[in-house]
Length: 476
Image (cartoon, rainbow, N blue to C red; front, side, top):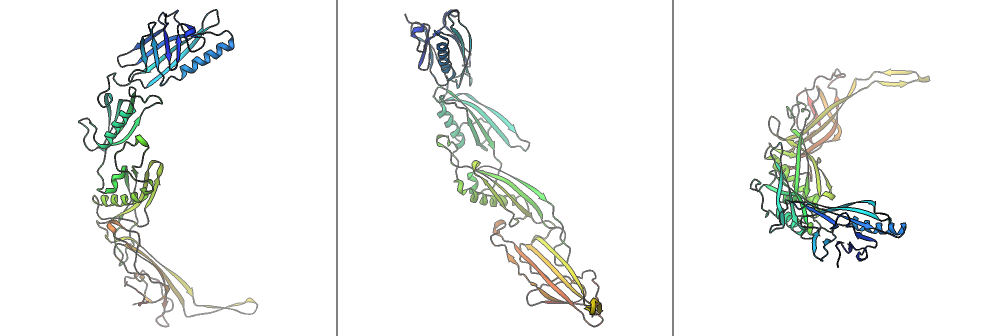
């Protein structure tokens, strides 16, 4: 007559030791006539208890047989586990539907006078879902959503669901990404798929095994209507105001304050290729090598979009920085914006100017015999003036001669600049900026014998445009 037995994968443990495939092992039925106890709840969680008696003729043989049993009990994920009655009928078979997590534990105790060891085994299957059967899409039960309402009003929803097998879980994520999944009535069309996580274990991909799925849906903020944003999975930006010093209130220079400067920083995260069947995002994708160029164009569109809420906005040339991070397909960006308009002159971005003087005596020093010095008076003092001028504006601004004290000042040396266009440094809507940057030196000529030691008074107010044909400045 057949005996009760427990099937663990390819191994069998029978109540009759000689019928067991594991040497020296038998299903212990002295304390439990059936040899095992099976428990299950309404959700599908289950627990199987049984005891295996292990015998060996020598200590070494016993240890070897115990090691063989422990090896079978330790690695049970994905194995077929059956309880077979004396009649040969299968009473229970594990894992049952919706059991993705299956583990065991065992205790050792003395087995009697013949030196046997009793191994008390407990195998547990955690329930997942609500215990219902999969629907037509393979979902077990319903998705549970956790809603996070941010202080700014945007909503993030995290969902947790269970699906029968990996394939149905992937199909659900694809439907979310493509916008074809059935969503709760409270979740509007402005919610977009952002992220997904699947809990799978090796050997649990069969159709009857539950696969937990965690997804995140985000209510996206409105942004630029730019085709390049179709490749962007997520983005963020921040504007930080930067205080600037007022312009020097000289004639010909803009009065009041310069434009408001703001640091613009943030990041773009792009969709790129994924691996095999896990490529579940149905949006447009971009090659990693093209991300830098795409981010550069996207930043142009973002600045254009920001202008819709500001006055005239231009990007300060040379301030842009893009830093790609290819493992996560993200590009960090940083630049400086000049927000024009209001009480400021809308044409000027920078105006920096300085004037300095060098005064030299015309006295002559004569060294005579044995190092004696004699001083020969001269006609007065030499005055030299250095003028530094820098202007950046949206319109060409000519170089202006310096404001000077009374007297006749003559151009000495230096390069008189023309307004130069910032080549390759495009501002908003493709408009360039112009820079006039120069440094010149002037010297003063006495008007007569009495004009030999002029004082430097407060700067005058007379200025005029200067170019290469006008190299002398006459005043008073």
